[in-house]
Image (cartoon, rainbow, N blue to C red; front, side, top):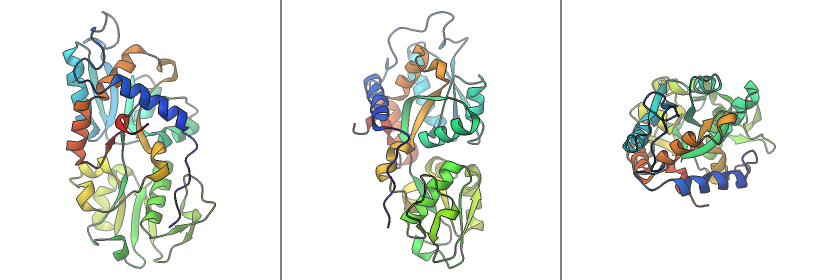
Length: 291
């Protein structure tokens, strides 16, 4: 099986800086964001909380961060979305202060497509994709001419295609780009139909397809256990940096004290425990990864 191509868009230096800053600000439990409460009229007050946009089960980890912050009289408001298409629009439009639902590759593609410069200011976790099925127990059992669903956004579609290659179902061309499409498939011995669906709807499609690529968070939302219910889990390898989930702000707010403080409340031991409990060990706290 061909190895994943080396990631270039998120440099090692940038990731190191983010993880180092997170490690310095996190892991301390209460007062992780600082001892002093927010000044009157500043972000983080009851009247003007830091609004963080999230998708799916991520809200459960942010509830832990919110509770830690409240002990310091610092206030976070969690704004929940049901899809991956609107949280960046809401942030760019000023309806949110931060969002935390996407990996770096997704953010890069959004910025390029929309002409925005939304900026990573922190990290959350590494979230592998899984291949799931209610019809077969392994990739080898996916039938000839079967249908496989993958996410329809460009980044996760390409990532999903790589996972299909890792699972031995297809082979990509040697010059396939970082985010390949079906046109970059060199060999498809089972003549699979690869069907692109909205990521949030794929779990519901399982009875109608032979297998499907699903994000771990959305799998948990659908009552699936990423470790025991998947028939294959993504081998991150060199691609891990690109697919670490991030906390994002508008470019003018990248040094905002209240927003960096919010990152600190997430990057704590308490939130790491919540990640492990909610996702049954299938996700890794990014701020704890080796530098």
